[in-house]
Image (cartoon, rainbow, N blue to C red; front, side):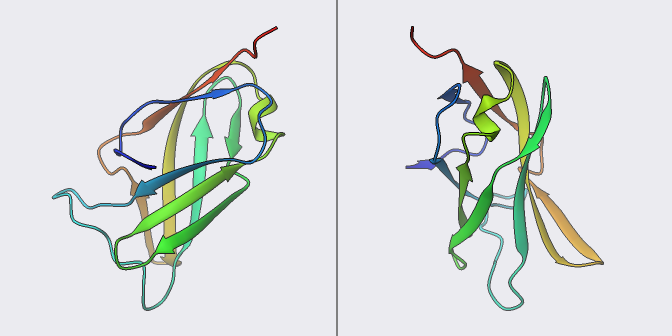
Length: 113
């Protein structure tokens, strides 16, 4: 499921292998080309503790769709809200973050007893 850039995401504490898909777009809503010199893309999350998703892969370089995977270690982070952003690095002189107008919210919630 492709999520809107700022749509909040809720994941249960301790889940493993959970993925989220996003499209990386510029300020005008156009996909940012991820072809040619392929960038390295990571997902940073800041909250009660800071962590990076265990991996991010490019699904479609022309549509700028990516998939972030969370490990069990990521989701053993404290329960609460995290502000997240993707960082695409093409070279030492070209780094962009998405969404460009803020962050999307990730909530790690308690597992059912």
